[in-house]
Length: 109
Length: 115
Image (cartoon, rainbow over all chains, first blue to last red; front, side):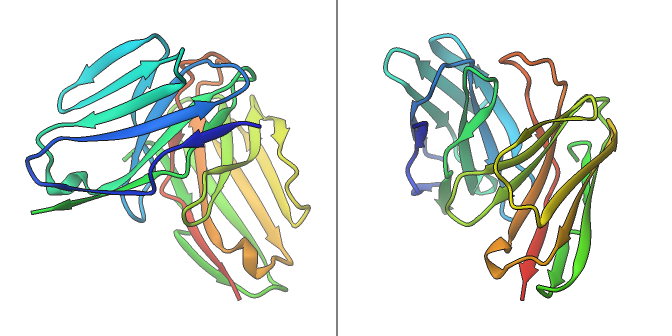
């Protein structure tokens, strides 16, 4: 079967750095997406990785290792507004997105 | 504002009611999606439309009936729902390019409660 694993919840301090991990087992791979979802709001697209390595976008970076079936989202200089759920999703061989259950990130002052 | 709107934002209905959820996208996309999001569970893909044709129906019960009159509008008709159908229903759209970079953009969802 297809499976995406990510931690259910994480806590971090304002101004710090946090890494949210995602491991996957899917039938085929056509890219990995990270989305941010604030409570009661739409998931919003953060990043897309299809090649191994690190993609940096301001305070957010996303890393991919296809051989290990592993990705992480790195958030630097955390702000209170970063409190949200972070969803990992993999596009499989049928170009269908397989989703993780999301990681709820709590930022404390 | 992501360019995808959904109405209503909240809906409470009895098991014998009939209601419809509406989604509209202003992004010029060709593909539209319905997802169900339950607490602490992965997003469940329900239906996919590409160029107004339904291309996916992931074993969704017949009490959920989609309609896509054009590439910009998507409806989900609901009838005789069960309490376990209570969830957040999300609509999304994408270019429909069938490639790995086909990013989906989401609406804010309809929070449905079935009594």
